[in-house]
Image 1 (cartoon, rainbow, N blue to C red):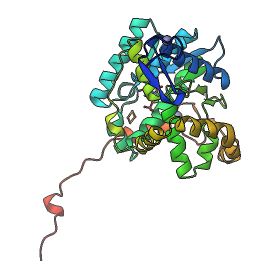
Image 2: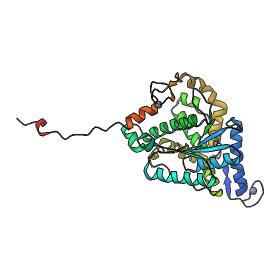
Image 3: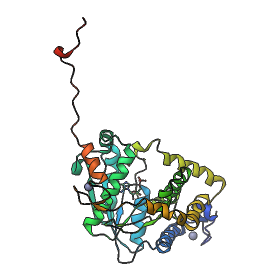
Image 4: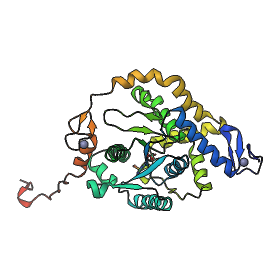
Length: 317
Ligand code: AMP
Ligand code: FES
Ligand code: ZN
Ligand code: ZN
């Protein structure tokens, strides 16, 4: 197995490119793919202050390394979600990475700052954990960018993530979501610009990139995500990819090039008028934003179940 570029011994095969690469040229390939996505979708300007949402996993840490290498001004943002050992460990990976690289890091702590964690808060609010978690993350990313004056928020969503979301939205014809599914969301109504520079890389690519760059990352997935439908779509797409290398890429990029614009109207129609949340001031479409409502429900005192007192128990007659 020889590297396509230098003909030296290869360390990895990339079947969708029908090529093998040595360590040096695989690392270069990953960086080139990110640079290509950035320029193709006009994601970042050279002077932008970029806030990278870092989870401690392979994707977001690889993203930090690549954007830093490409010369962007990056800072990290981590949210501690209160998911037991998983949160403690992932925070450790993020803090170690940041201190080794002198990466400025902002940390929000859901239990300390807002009084609830995802397992208990989602139960109290009667929401699925991943839904309460996603809502909290989106809100806190936006807030951190607004407060810190960042130009753009970058997340580590990769080709597998985006193709799986596309598959879910297509299977159920969620046309309004299809209209909004893009690697760049422009800033609007007080919401910051959001970008996904890893859309041209797969999970396998980012894992290999971290290995070759000596980036220590959290391997375990979130314990609350078990049974999540996206994991199922990802595995279905991986099965298709085995017999049809490149299928994920052509599914997602074919959609962006040939189909996404047909759903723009559906996305636009669903956009409600934006106002300021009466509690936190964030842009939202109702009196109080969804995150403040989640905080209220998740932190509401739990009613104590009383045993019936003797006087109130029914007496057989
Ligand atoms: P996920 O939703 O877990 O697939 O993560 C997608 C992206 O969201 C990651 O690549 C990160 O950029 C970001 N992210 C996920 N969890 C966190 C977290 N706890 N703190 C900050 N960013 C996160
Ligand atoms: Fe959000 Fe698992 S990381 S529920
Ligand atoms: Zn090579
Ligand atoms: Zn609010």
